[in-house]
Image (cartoon, rainbow, N blue to C red; front, side):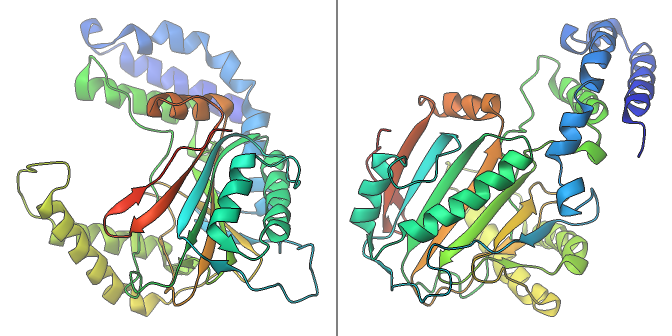
Length: 349
C-alpha cells in the first residue's frame, strides 16, 4: 500500500515552496503556508478514516477505474413471494435530511407514514424497510451516519422516452466565494487537491439509488463512460449559443439543454445501457470529470425510486443551513405538472 503520509507531506511542501514565489498580498491568510504546514499532521491522521470511506476495499472500485457499480440484492421481508401490487395514487416525493433512520415500522417518521397513506395504494413498507436496512449497513461500513434521502413516486409518463443522459454534480463541494477572486479559488482547489488526493476520494463524491417499483435507472456501460463524458462535453459546446440570460428561466439555456439531450440520445445509442436488477441498488460517482453518465428509464408504468446522498453531519447541516431549514428535517412535495415543477406542504418530523 502506498505511504499516503509521505505523499501528503511531499505534495504539501512542494505547494508551500510554490506559494513563496507569489506576491504576499495575493495570498489570503486562509491559504498561508504556515497554516497549511501546521495542518499536515492532523490531515495525515485522517488517512485510515479516508481510506475506509472510499470504495477501494469493500467495493473494488478504485479511483479512475469505475464510475458506478451495482450491489447486493436487497432481501425483502416477502422474499420468495410475489409482492402485492402497489399503485401510485398521487405522484409526489418525500425527503428527509438527517441521521440515518432506524428502519422499523414504529421508528420511521410519522410524516413518512402520512405520505405513504396519501400517495400509494398497497403496502410498500416491508420492501422499503428492507432497502433502508441494506443502505444503512452499506453507509455505516463507510463510516457515514447521515444522508439526504428522497423517495419519489411517479406515474407512467412519456417524459423520458428520449433519455436524459447526465451526470450529477457535487452536492457539498461548491467553490467558496473569495476576496481573491479567481486566484483565491485556484489556491483553494490546489490546497484541497493536495490535502485530499484523488486516490483518497472524499466520501461525498458518490451517491446511491435504487428502484423499489418499476424500471431501474439506466447507465452507460463502464467501458464507455469516459468516452461518453467526452461526447457530452463536445455536444454541449456544439449546442451552446452566446446570449444574455434575461431571467432565471432562460429560454436560450433551455433550448440548448434540450438540444444537448436529443443529441446525446442519438450519439449514445452505440454505447448501449445497463440497469440494476430488481432489488439491487447502484453506487455511482458524481462530478463532471468522473461522474457516471446515467438517465431515467422509459417509464411506461408507475415507479417508486429512492435517491440517497450520503454525507458527514457537518456537510448535511451546512446544506440545511443553506436552505434555511432546521436539521434534521423532512418534507414532501406533490407533483402538479412535471413540466411546471412541484408544489406541496412542508412536513415536520
